[in-house]
Amino acid sequence: MLNQLRQIVERKKGQRDKVVSLLSTCKKEIDQLREEINFSEQAQTIIQKVAQETQKQLEWHISEVVTLALASTFDNPYVFKTEFVQKRGKTECDLFFEKDGFRVDPITEAGGGTVDVAAFALRVAMWSLAKLKWRSTLIFDEPFKNINDKTRKIHERIADMVKVLSRKLKLQFIIITMIPELEEIADRVFEFNLIKGKTKIEEKIKNKNT
Image 1 (cartoon, rainbow, N blue to C red):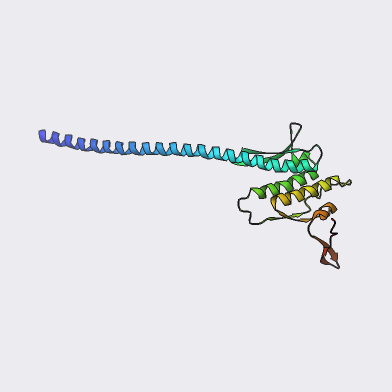
Image 2 (cartoon, rainbow, N blue to C red):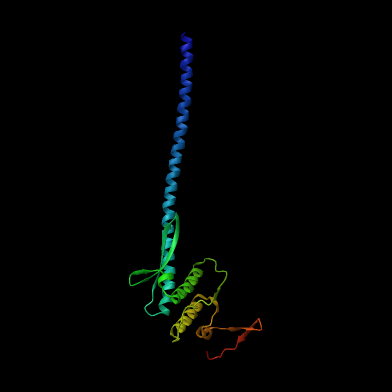
């Protein structure tokens, strides 16, 4: 009887030791998981701070370039703004104009000419942000087609803006346009004519004084 009790006690001790060992292993795994969670939270905090700082720099750079383009073209221009917001679990960038402290939707509330200039400058700004600028040429097809300028003033300002951007950024523009003022500041001008169903391309000889 005594031997049987001893055997039972020894079995129970063995079971207890297994449970203690298992608890020790679980505790180590829990501590490791807590440490990994802590590291993940710290990493997430750092990533969020970096993302926020990057977004601020992007907002400043893009807004500055487009706002300067608008200011150099129009009297009493809009201010171009960007804002990063969370939508549907993703970060999106809202683009809008601002005037006299009020937010303006570019598509529905601003004129087409203003949108044309903003879109042109926005593309240039995005190009300037690229780390690898393997191509220093941008091609535009009638980028200012919605600007109706009978006085030539705005067209002249647009031509000056294009010329300044090209020189400062060392960026070549290939522009399809019907605006004479852009033709005047171009290095080379090609004229397209449709003759008997065929397109004829001729380079126009510019006056050396222009």
